[in-house]
Amino acid sequence: MIIEPKTRGFICTTAHPVGCQAQVKQQIDYVKAQKPLSGAKNVLVIGASTGYGLASLITAHFGMKANTLAVFFEKAATDKRTASAGWYNIAAVEKASHQDALVMSINGDAFSHEIKQQTIDAAKKHFGPIDLVIYSLASPRRIDPNTGETYNSVLKTCGQPFHNKSIDPLSGKMMDVTIPPATADEIKGTVKVMGGEDWAMWIDALEKANVLAKGVKTVAYSYIGPELTFPIYREGTIGQAKEDLEKTAAKLSQQLSSLQGHAYVSVNKAVVTQSSAAIPIVPLYISILFKVMKEQKRHEDCIQQIYRLFNECLYRTDAKIPIDEKGRIRIDDWEMEPSVQAAVAKLWPQITEENVMKLTDLAGYRRAFFNLFGFETEGVDYEKDVDPAIEVSSIE
Ligand code: NAD
Image (cartoon, rainbow, N blue to C red; front, side):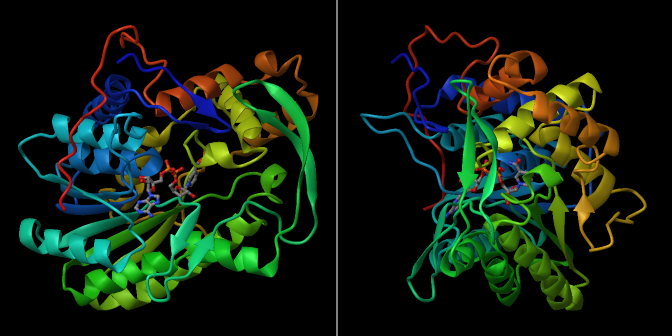
């Protein structure tokens, strides 16, 4: 069939297998062109099929030649629809995988006890002790596996409503938005979904099953961003969840001390992913940020960020992981540089629907968005018939 992008709101409901494969290949090629990494032999990535998790999987497997166990929640193709982009990404990683190390996939709800157990069983059977656990889940909901209760994550403020301008990046239509304050239940729900509870449950389960290596590292990803987005991000419901994640890192570090292990939060930069596209105001901020950082020749996507995280922080040769005053790794350092933020802050009030294409990199944002689903990728013939039914060798 011929597969075209079909968008609904901030998501694309179709994905292109050949385009996703080409996107994955670009990331693999980037990693292979860098200095080889070493330090971890067995790596577990939770949330490995798109965005920062996919880049972590690729960096570990192709940059470090580590055995990688990928956990994700994606959909195979049916008669009526293409598979999800993450499904095609994992298929592409499996296809490109080299003989030096394993790549194994587990598709299912990472919040559940069953998927944790399945991961432990696979680790015991096929892998040596796990040296690195990356936690890169982004989800709108979570079923608490102990109570069966469903929690939803919301993107709202904590306290006062917040007014600002926003953009629908696909239509280019600008609007003033008001983000309402969350109720106490909504804040609690967001923390349940995106906070540290599930990360801690993973580490508990892995530790109890004796599958963690001496000196194990675990890293969860976070975001801070500029003051401009504080009311909707860092001081909003999602920010509360990230605070919880950061507190969890401290607790997990204590827990892992008997293994001489350590838990970190890595604060990463803003990039276009399926998750960040869903946050109001943020796409406009990213469009300006891309413009500024590209002009300063400091633009990075997930793969550049994660390679830098591994190379300059987690597995640097002097083993001294640089952290901020709160113990966090700051790979968002280039985004947060005063010259970058000053340039963004200067542009923000000037942006209108008329000048947005000129003053921001909305075109780059859109391209990056379609790239997530395998579209608008150079070298791919979108007129050509493709079979959407691609296999992923997920462990059942
Ligand atoms: P993403 O949407 O691209 O990836 C989410 C991943 O989670 C996918 O692999 C998906 O399959 C998996 N997933 C979701 N629900 C699952 C479930 N129930 N079971 C198993 N897997 C599940 O998201 P992303 O933007 O890469 O975000 C990953 C992390 O990075 C998040 O913690 C996010 O806050 C953080 N982060 C993102 C940005 C950004 O700009 N996108 C910036 C800094 C930090």
